[in-house]
Image (cartoon, rainbow, N blue to C red; front, top):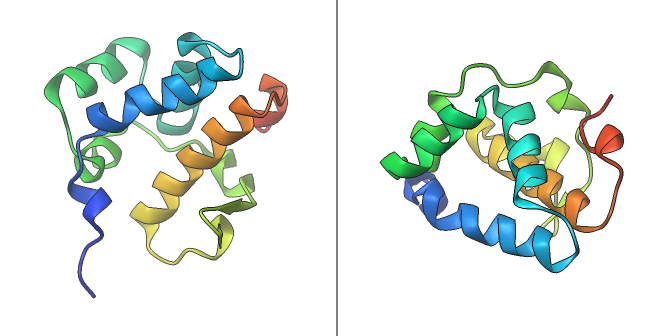
Length: 116
């Protein structure tokens, strides 16, 4: 099966869209960073380094310090697909991130987004 185009897409190109989506709904860039760091284990400096390096999604997730164990609790639909049913591990991580940003933009409380 061929790789998805998003795997080779630079995370730095998508990151501003995550921020814009959240900010349009009254959330902040810091909150977007918080959910990304929670999911991936990056600290803020590590996240900014990945953005500056323009790492693709494959590299971004491969170099992530530690995917949060509670990420398995992320459920729901993104782009018409249930995230818990996605078989490809990298695509599942990308969709988990999409789902977290969606929940942030919908005004969900941070404690619920971070599955605490």
